[in-house]
Length: 140
Image (tube, rainbow, N blue to C red; front, side, top):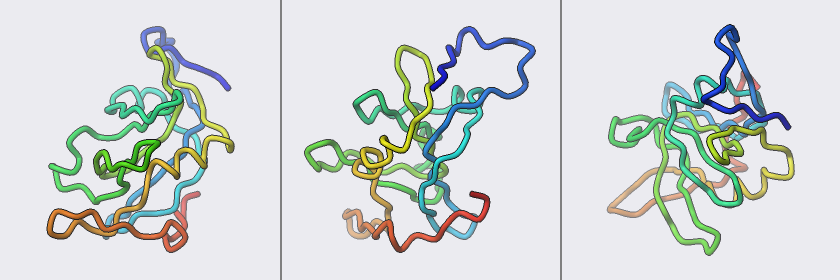
């Protein structure tokens, strides 16, 4: 795994990548299955980092739910307690001390255990849907 210190990005680099678990939403409002892919560190650095614990973090657009982005995943803590809902495209990475590091296959179970696909929010209740029903992202 390679880490990139945000404050020390080489000025001549156009594109630095780390492995991320990516959870996308489509233009018509559907959430897709997560998949391992590469994420641009400069883009990640501009996003809001939501800590999941164990060195994992979700990079997302801050206030995406309020801005009307498509609901993507509900966040649960290790005890199964609901924390918040995230919207828009999400990327799970390792983030420690201002440094992004790639995730690996072994991290996926922890990520999926903490993040559940949202079907909708109705009457103040978050309604989830099964990950197995989510379509596969075409660009994967």
